[in-house]
Image (tube, rainbow, N blue to C red; front, side):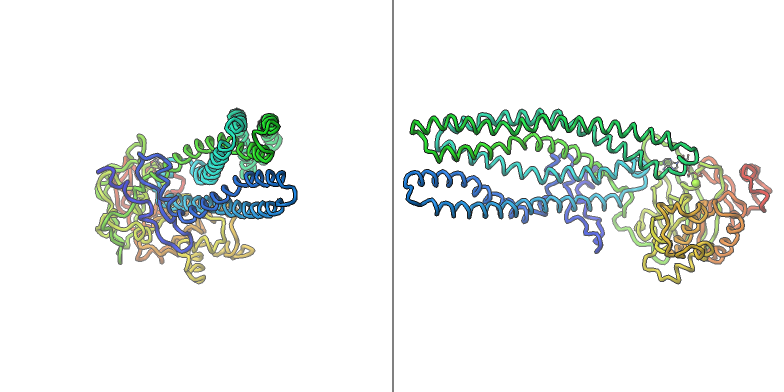
Length: 608
Ligand SMILES: Nc1ncnc2c1ncn2[C@@H]1O[C@H](COP(=O)(O)OP(=O)(O)O)[C@@H](O)[C@H]1O
Ligand SMILES: [Mg+2]
């Protein structure tokens, strides 16, 4: 039974959107299979073009391998009857050369195109899957790691897909050429291939030297890039501590390490490459020596001699490539494991069979005896026996010490996480029985750390509703109290904010985030410390606007400031993972010492 969901093709829940072509297919969900077989559905999608590719390759190969044979006949014929006959062969050879060129070009072009197509499919497959993974996945993994899986690991599979078939054809050319040579003269054929194992051994030894060095060099390049990146993003810190000289020293040490390994790498390549290239030439000398002796003896013709010496060079290719292809195979195997780890990750939060859209929700939110701990490892239980009802249209403030679980409560309503026991209900329906998409349309929150994209302010606000007309965007900006500073910007709402919105102040970013959520016009609005970085005076104007907007909307505010708390009809005090007291602010202040203590620990009391 447990394996049941594995049978689901990953594409099953992929939205068919017109912009990003979803992967044409998925991977085989059976984890016990050999990794190449798991990729088969992806490969199969390209089988038509791949068949054409290999057909071109094979025909090209036959032409290539036949050239020395034609040459052989041409020379033998020419030596036999010097009066002519050579011209015909010259034309044939010329024609073959053109055909071989055309076929090899087409074949390589198609092969790399196919490999890139599969790469693109795999990339969009991973991307679509990543968008479906739950918050708990992103809590667990480092984003740099995921990014590297989506880049370099796909690349190493793509390289194998291109060079694997290339090598297979080269190996076939060896078999064909060797067969032809054997049919002409067995001892000479054996002498011709005798040096090939040595080519492989040397190429392999070169790889043994080069591979660790290239690994180290890549790591050191990443190290230099990281130092530069941190110094550019963290330049304000570096300058404020006048640490430029120290940082330059750090960078030059990293650069020195990179130079050492890069030089060692070039050195290793320079030593092995000429040796590997020399062996086929040595082989040619052997062919000429032994073959020449045979020719003088009358056992073979001069044409045979020439054909064999051409084959020596041709057949060394698969031996040179073999080590590289084997290495690439190992890399691709490791990379596929890392990619499958993502693709095999279960998108825990997904629609149940029969889930229905929220519909015309009134917006009543109920927590029924909820228990929750963050998934994974031994995270402590955050909520236990948590029960709370927020009536449709009501505004409730959650108050409690830092870390008591206020933000967690907010994250459970739109199903960022699922509860361990009990239930969260919207309009009396368990959120797990509603479609995630409609739920998140109706429940929106302004998070405690708003994230802005490096786009214009208008696009950031319209992120929640890309088709919203400008006047609605402006209304939202105004309601969030952001119109003042936005209209002061040089390009107003078309101003592009810097990376993650860092060209704005914390309070300005919060206001853009509020505007973004207001534009979504959710039935249930959650403000998680959403005005913590905004001045008290500005906050008052936001509140004036919000009071109007919140009028018939279910709202949950999480706040420390009394000014924010005063927005609420009712205040709920959270402690030890449950609601310990509730009532109006005045009622709680008069009746509950804990409430007073929490407010007193802030400095805001004087504000009311
Ligand atoms: N993504 C997470 N993974 C694991 N533990 C978390 C995560 N987010 C919060 N926590 C823990 O859950 C508890 C409640 O956090 P939170 O709801 O953010 O508190 P509050 O918003 O009341 O300050 C804290 O102990 C916090 O360390
Ligand atoms: Mg919080």
